[in-house]
Image (cartoon, rainbow, N blue to C red; front, side, top):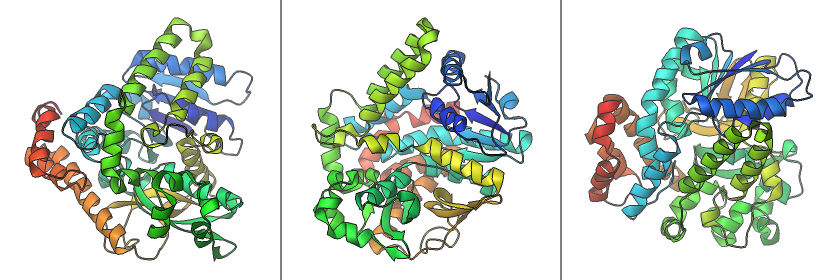
Length: 442
């Protein structure tokens, strides 16, 4: 089986390869092709992977390519983790918004709209290339904004593309652990959009045990999301919110916290990753050690701008595995036909009543050799449905604007986002992001 990783020079690619090294089922991925437009980054990541594979007899073979067609041809699985505009684009997304007094974050709010405007056209070109060169491949999308990009790609690939995110799985795992339960023995009742969802239930031995957790303030404080949002607010919601909902429920607090920091998250990552790639170029023999060091720093700083100064990320959360585990679980279920249940970004259909059938939602799915099918669930609460519908409308407007190169639609998308509180600000965002220039070069 052959896996092609788009964005193969990316910092997190070794996580995927590490998961493959630990997979000994049959059939399995035995060849990995890394594609990237940056040959120097490809070389650095290849050094890391080579050192990870030392002493592993059945390690998947790795090759690299800067030609998309060559990388895609014959692939069984395609993992898309591209970043159009690089980290420089991310920092601009953050600062343009912050300078106007609105949230500067890469997937949530105006930053996510800007990121989507430049990413959707490239994602569509990739989807069309997959149809030509690897028509039987499954595409696993982690390119942000993941829900929006997956929805755009589904217009070409249909159900053969799914979006993944580790946040919902990590949330359910933390909730189970706080109750002293094995997360593997629980089933989450989760719904939402990517980076906008709620854990509404947690089934163990046929019983929903989440109410027990919500009623136990001591146990609840052991869950990172409850500490982030506050126990009282979580109890008022009657659900555990995805960490990214902090930017909606505490928008002013989040903006104030981010603006107090000397750097945005993008600034930090840009500086850190430049140092990592430079260090590997200077001393390739230490590539894996350099990557491990940089990864530990990166993990520890995740969402640091909204955590208390004295609060570190839970060690179990960091070691519990992330999106690479979700990707491997999906590939294993499809390759081997062994059914599993996992939270994915898929076409809504009739799963969540009141939302667009063609819209991509993030819900538990049944996965086997035929792919992913969303499981039926109870209807969203009115406040959940309202927020999801407004953000989904923005996502769909952004897709239309990007494909039509329509500045008016882009302005409307910014203006209708719940985290942009003024049409005037939306127009200033369009100017600040240079949407006119962007559309001329797409």
